[in-house]
Length: 428
Image 1 (cartoon, rainbow, N blue to C red):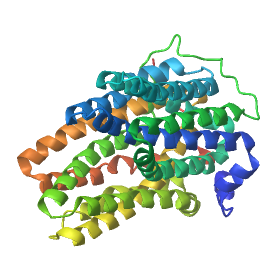
Image 2: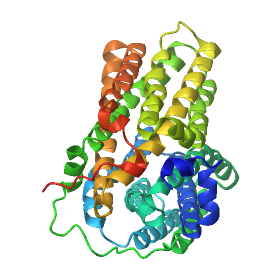
Image 3: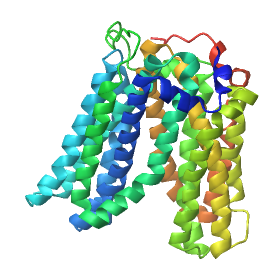
Image 4: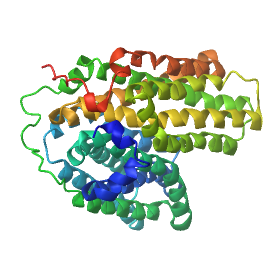
């Protein structure tokens, strides 16, 4: 039975969770770890600002150090971790994050907490999260057969989107009830629960995880693999352009809407939140759309929503609540496309890349994606200063629309999981 035949079931993801115990445990671990990661992103700045009375510069330092490993180590980590025992690495990463985040309440209770200590914890926790994410991406094909990848990724992306939506609210409640430092106790416990779930996710079929490592290969192999493939190359270029443009668009949109167009901060926050709602809905309908169109064509259709629709945000001469409603609608629709696209992108890469190169390719992909973010943020400030925030946001939206052009190729349009093209070997 091929992937599209399995998609015809009413809910293939729930079916997979119901019948596949190892994947169910893995999904639980991923879900809990995802909630923990999003809570960490939300709570650490609050610890800096509230528990330590930190300045905006202090908050920025902690936030930057948490993301720094993705910029510094992604490609090296993917190369180094290739061929290692994935489950052990994920469990170790969870335990490390539990220990690191658990140290913050202890330091706070002993009056030893400081901004430099928080920055160190954020950096080490970010490194552990990077390792978890890289090997987690390459572990899914070990758990489920290729024709089940779409259903597996839908389940994982659905819970990940839920975590992005719910974790700030959960974190806010915990911070309000316990204070920011003690709230990290619950965060640390979530990583322990994740480690238990991952530990129980033993593949039902024997997987050889020791046949190849990064020894004897170049750290650049993952990047070479991505750009050698007629399918992976446009996917990588699109992801980099999208992340670059989204920074220009979103950072200038908030300034234009709140400072110039009298949209209240609360209304803007609610409007942006509709993007998460749309993404969650998108994960639920992604497989049905792929069933009708094929995964490649469904991917292109999803990019029309996520990349082109944002152009409609800044064309209206609206202010206040009316503009907030427009932003909410745009975020909802583009979020649906983004929810679809995330599933298709992950499934395509897992299907195309040889298993013994999945981790290093994920590291290279992460390096390109996250490397585009600071470039986009710097460009956002420069364009906003020179051209004004509305024009800069419009330019960002235009680049978002253009980012889908590399994806309109025969290789992408004809892609089908069950009949994937032959994988491209990495070049030395």
